[in-house]
Amino acid sequence: MHERVVVVTGGNSGIGKETAIALAILGATTVLACRDRAKAESAAADVRAASGSPDVHIAELDLADLTSVERCAADVLARWDRIDVLINNAGGIWSSRHTTAQGMEQTFGVNHVGPFYLTALLLDRLRQSDAGRIVTVSSFAHRAAFAGIHWDDLQSEKRYTPFGAYSQSKLANILFTRALADHLSDTTVTANAAHPGPVRSGFGMDGDLSGVAGWGNRLFRPFEITAKAGAATSVYLAASPEVHGASGGYYARSRPARMSAQARSDAAAARLWAVTESLITEAGYHLP
Ligand SMILES: NC(=O)c1ccc[n+]([C@@H]2O[C@H](COP(=O)([O-])OP(=O)(O)OC[C@H]3O[C@@H](n4cnc5c(N)ncnc54)[C@H](OP(=O)(O)O)[C@@H]3O)[C@@H](O)[C@H]2O)c1
Image (cartoon, rainbow, N blue to C red; front, side, top):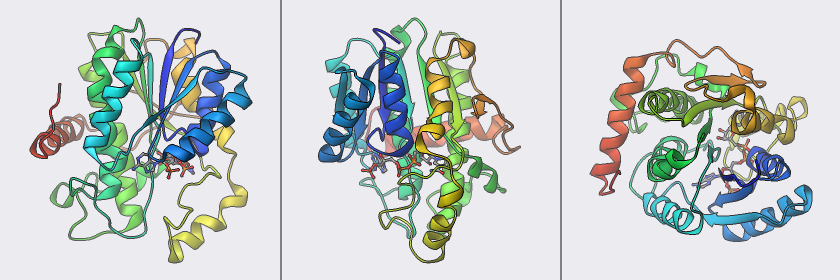
């Protein structure tokens, strides 16, 4: 990964931070794109110390605000003349319904729309790489979106449950990845999705999940894998020669994994792509 530039969203915590450490150890210029500057600076110091690489940087990114996504992309494009890997890792689950700066439901906005827009804004630079890679961290939880994307209630206005919104967003990550791979089929850039496994990270902690859901989240922590182990599939997809040229896949434990029937729907992938583009442009943002 020497002389390759990698951007990891949510690189200040959990799986993202361990992904950044592993890629910095492999020699990549590593950029942690994070919403909290103080946390990002502290994480960058940890990543430098753990990897022995001084080549670790931060960029400010709040995926709950498309203006911040635009600023982050402009900042990264101005500071690095190449981007080889984008890891859409940041994400969350929230007990109650919140909205993004553009009024979208937060789980859908942060886990899907923000990464979609960031990817679009960085895509030309990724295309200039000899073998650009886009890795989006999804989850086995996508399988719980049994009815697929809630087309009649995309923003969970009629009904909000934390896991319902989360599983839809993780399904959206795979549908996005598959549509993106299709759009990139005549280029050398690949797009793949990862399931990290059940990971003992900051996920759902810090008051993000309360009540029964928060209690359940804590109950399983002793049985979960470390963030380092959870980062392995992201690192594999970002760096391994074994997946050179492979695109549109869903991986767990660094192997192709079976996605749900809903995730395999080409019609849903194309529809979500079009709907997301409309949401972004209708909110007043420009897609390249
Ligand atoms: N943990 C699991 O068992 C598990 C299983 C399957 C999939 N995943 C996926 O793995 C990914 C990483 O999660 P994790 O387990 O490492 O959890 P984590 O430790 O909570 O990390 C989540 C990261 O996302 C960032 N983030 C949240 N909202 C953001 C926003 N608006 N803008 C920018 N960054 C934002 C967080 O930043 P702050 O620190 O500032 O909050 C943090 O860096 C997520 O996409 C999650 O869905 C996790």
